[in-house]
Length: 161
Image 1: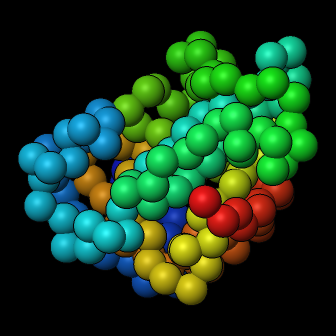
Image 2: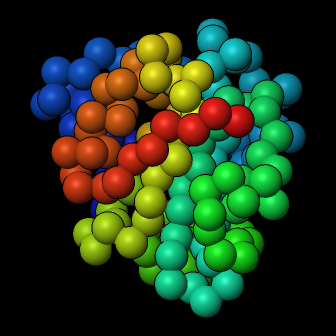
């Protein structure tokens, strides 16, 4: 499992430029106003979603200021009925606990069960995400993150939210 230091080491080994902001733990976007971030407009939130039969799983990353309408998302992407994944599913598939979810945890998904959707706003801009621990934010270019996730074998799709 990739802890914070392992994420930093991986990014260095891939020659990916990044910056780190250490801060108090953030368990949800509601905690964000208590933390000063250098690029708050590029901070991301992540939603772990599954279909009702628990056959398909999705991680959705969008800018923190955006709201995701799951009914519209389901319709736009022609998905079966969806809801939030459970704490157990999150751990079993992505080896992460609630409040620590990050696109980096997709690297734990050895069976590639999770389809990754990322806000197209990040395609040519920076993104701020947890390094699998919620007491820091890693800032890197969105395309570098997507390349890393695709290199792992995860299906990635840019979306407009």
